[in-house]
Amino acid sequence: MFMLSMLAFVLSLAAQEQPQQTAAKLEVQIQQPVAKVSPILYGLMTEEINYSYDGGLYGELVRNRTFHDSNWDLPGWSLVEKGISVASMEVDKSTGPSAALPLSLKLKVERADAADPAGIQNTGFWGIPVRPATTYQGSFYAKASDRSVGPVTVTLRDDNTGAAVATATVPSLSTEWQRYAFTLTTGAARLSAANHLVLCVEHPGTVWFDLVSLFPPTYQDRPNGNRVDLMEKLAAMKPAFLRFPGGNYLEGDHLSQRYQWKKTIGPLVDRPTHPSPWHYHSSDGMGLLEFLEWCEDLHMQPVLAIYAGYSMAQEHVTPGPELEPYVDDALQEIEYVIGDRNTKWGAVRAGDGHPEAFPLNFVEIGNEDFFDRSGSYDARYAQFYAAIKKKYPQLQLIATTPVKSVRPDVIDDHFYRAPEEFFADTHHYDKTDRNGPKVFVGEWATRKGTPTPDFGAALGDAAWMTGLERNSDIVIMASYAPLFVNVNPGGMQWETDLIGYNTLASYGSPAYYAQVMFSNHHGDEIIRSTLEGGGPRFFYSVTRDAAKNVLYLKAVNASSLPQPIDITLAGASEVQNDGKLIRLSAKTPNETNSISEPAKIVPVESTVNNIGSSFRHVLPPFSIEVLEINWR
Ligand code: AHR
Image (cartoon, rainbow, N blue to C red; front, side, top):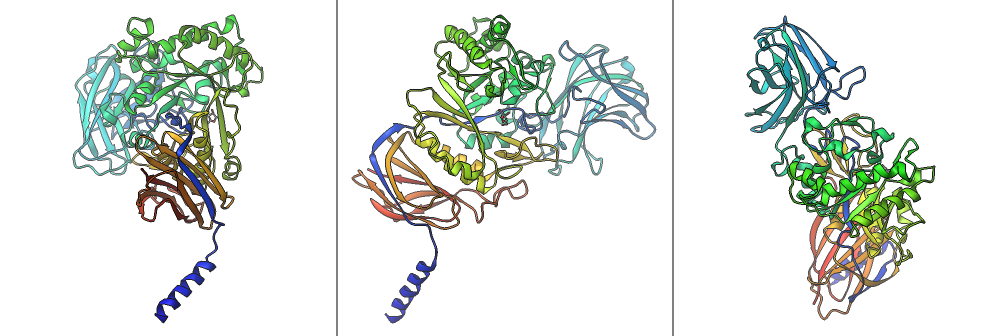
């Protein structure tokens, strides 16, 4: 007895000594919904940045496959002269397989034989990933000076040993441009990124190559499809929409470098490719149809951003007759997405392999037009608005900055901030006029950590998301940006990106897991609640899924001290004793995940047993939680 009371005394002393935040008193009225949660609150924003598609999501393994990325050098490519073979290579601007690809790589072989072939090789995007027992689909366009050049041998080779990992042969080449397909299958190969692709011939002669392509197995086996691990990471976010194609990538630095959707559809050989504002050339393999199919695969609705007459070097198209062709182009783009097969552009889409129309509710007119110093956006928006609404009155049209001459359906707000700024601004939308345009937070991120956000950033994000969720009657959509970064040297143009990857593997940042937690538990109604006390870095939101009688309490403790909460659940006849707790936490805000430590910080699931109509729950320091409670 004496021992027990001593133990209780010691424990109570320990509890007193353990510093913690002042307790928060949270009262939740389970039966009092105050507003609807937007069912499409959480989605994705994407553009070609940080090698997001080329060298990222888009499955292509050959870098610079059409030789367009070339100044003095030819990224990705070099000459192969084995043994006594003699050859040279150069970009030939006088011949190519199509009007869209008028140039090619000319390989001139002076001397070669079976033992000493000559050719070209590609290093891929920071190597070519080789996996055991895997089949790769390849192809290239080529023509030969004459038939004596003989077969082309295609080989995946290990960078370090030079050993062939897989080989295929194209028996002979025509003297006219033609496409040749091949298959490479690995055997008991070692998992490795240190490989390159070699195309060689064994006889003298000249060969022109173009659109050299190699694909690994893709998500849902789509031809010209996407990388599996990255698609799976996105699927786990349960995103409701995809905003594409940008971002700056939509606008381009110059008008001539804007995203021109018509040049991104149809066979790859008919896509001219284009320079992107993020300092590398885009293959446009991820074209308009591929964006839409990406939406289809992950059950997202497209949020289609259309080019609206402004490019980033302060180039704009004057509203009025000059802008008319751009408006027409946008109408045709929308028809490509939603027109049936009897429409001109719906028929083109069907010809491209997708007879069914895609769903479309939102069209965004431009991107960040507050940067346009000419002040032309108001009139440009109005011109697009009038034309699109006339033909498609059902579409919701998003403005990228406030305009006066017409009332936009939705305004796109962007926020790139430090954690402290988000902590201080979680009430940003509490007072927003509910009769005004809806809000789309189309780009946002807590920028702390590189290349991917650390746990401190995840805390800023989660705090901010509690505010978005609480206001999701007016904030109908939100998407973190940028989504992707290739963490190989030179892969990143913008720091703090949600998901990182190299040639073989990918990982989610702590901020990624915060998104997964919020998006998988958003509920459908915001519940009345009041909070008293609590530390200055405590944030929360409460929603419920009315049909399932489940309550979701999201709580964020961005402090280094534990945060006790005394929770009262009013209005339920019975609250289930056991609740599900999902916790993401770290020892310090600087802790993070990385390509070498991808799972340091991941959500951990457990059961909380002490739940009743009133109970105490303690959030550990630096933690983000979702507490799932069932009631009757
Ligand atoms: O997300 C990176 C860039 O930030 C986007 O391209 C642009 O819209 C914004 O300024």
